[in-house]
Image (cartoon, rainbow, N blue to C red; front, side):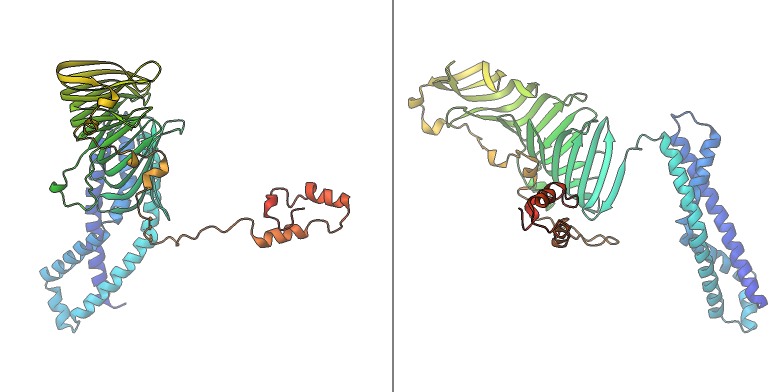
Length: 468
């Protein structure tokens, strides 16, 4: 090897080594600070913190190698300029292009060594680091994978298990999502479907959402859930204040048993431990509708605000605050219609049981009258703001998707296209099984063929061509 090539390689490698050591030191210091912050409330020794920092540093420095090569090249040429060595090479007949060619080959050689050697042991160190640190993290039960069916996320929060499936990630949003919440026995608590979820913040915002559980379902522009306090917020988004194509204006609505509850904003509070419904708050334009059990009419309650309490996951009391108005079908103990009551008042308190009104207390009542059914005006049978939305109500998990267009999953690079599974019991298999049966036609052999043919005993008889 020529002397000038050895000289250039020596200068470049020396600069590379110094830059690498400086960067490694900085990364190590940053790792120490990060580990100290992580273990501030955990009793571990300083030696363990230093050990974890050393394990994590190689993987971090690997991602910085392009920057290290850049700084190395700058230092390399600065040294040549300061010592006028470029002029010496020029007078010796060595062109700048030759120097660049030497540096390119040397950089390529070093890069290959880094990828084949350094990357392998840094990855092993990283795995060992994660294994050790996972013993001290509360997120050890978190899992995220990408399959042919999109992104799947599993997480456990406050003894609740969440399975999230999304078709794609776009910027800070999960698109076309389905969330299932389980208790620690893997019993389904509720299902939630959404077109878009904003994951930019720690608390996710769920847009154009539908929620379903056996005794409660709902729809809203946006749903915010805080499991730590058991709060579910159904929020109405002002369409005029956003240009987001995903936003579709629809006033929040909840269905509990036979009650439909709407308002500009609905807050539902649940017991964190038992998951039972605890209380309900509806702000602005509160409206409750309950279809009369035996007739075609609708029991209706409206007002500015509504506060409700639940017992055994059914509404037990309702308080209507300000501008309260009611329309109620009165029935006797034999379920005979006694009359139709319609009135206005400053506030109303209602006690319910078995989804029927037991008692009603009106404060500052303004007018009001109980009409016989035949005397009740037809145009008075609904209160202003009435909107029966039973057709939108999800009554099963599948109903969460009934308004959606067919889902087309995006192709994920590195994964083969989805191929539907073929039938397990194909024609070739059935032919081979039939041929394996005894060919004699005696009654004894026929009986043996049907009952004792081991090759056919697990196959449904309806699949055979000749089912004797």
